[in-house]
Image (tube, rainbow, N blue to C red):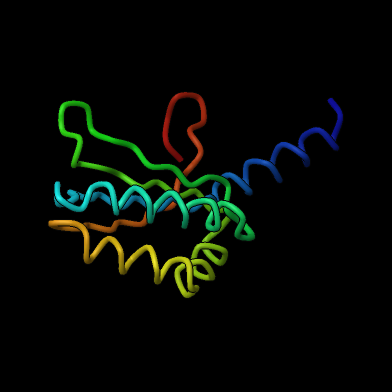
Length: 119
C-alpha cells in the first residue's frame, strides 16, 4: 500500500472533520417575503465569495413558503468566526431579525461517518 495515499486520505478526513455548518431557521413575515428574498439574494453572493465559504444556500420548507432555512458551510471554525464577525453577517443577521417572525441559529461541527458509524 502507498503510504502517501494514507497520508492524503487522513489529511482529507481531518479537513472534513473541521467543516463548520451553520443553520438558520427562519419564519418570514408574509408581507416581508419579497424584501427578504431580495436582501438574501444580494448578500448570499457576497458571502459565497468569502474566504473559507464552501457553500451558502437557502431552502424553503415544502408546504410552508414562509418557513426557510439558511445553510452555510465553512472550511473550519476559524473561517466561520471570521464570517460571523464581518459586515455580511451583520447585514444578514439584521435582515433576519427585522423581516422574520422568529429566528433560531444553531452552529454545528460535522464529523465524518466511517463504516456507517459516526466518529
